Amino acid sequence: MEEAKKQNKTKILIIEDDAFIMDMYCTKFEMTGYKVLKADDGIKGIKIINENKPDVVVLDIIMPRMDGFGVLRMIKKDPKLQDIPVILLTNLGQKENIEEGLELKADDYIIKAHFTPDEVVGRVEKVLKKSKN
Image (cartoon, rainbow, N blue to C red; front, top):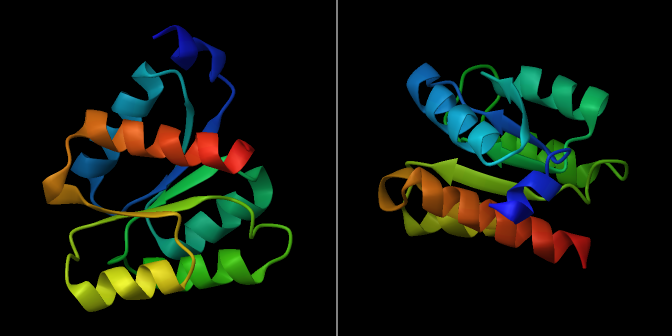
């Protein structure tokens, strides 16, 4: 818990169109000491990324207006944003979806149904630690 307090200024952007899932992860990350930004579609997510440059993006794939793969492509194509770690958090568990996400340089690929919110926080912290080295 002590480490979570030190990370207090770490900004995490969650891009998720399901309100229940969004609230659950916002609460979990806030309780762990993160500043949480949120967007409910890919277009809003890109706008927030450009305005706030979060430390990490947790990104759903299936969303209205622009899907997660489109957001990921835009982040990794932009020299000002490409170093931001992106974690795909999705229900898409097919091999081809996972391969596409990793080919697009996602830092992690998490299937929602396979992980608890605590485990997701742990995976995000692992990616953040790696990106700071």
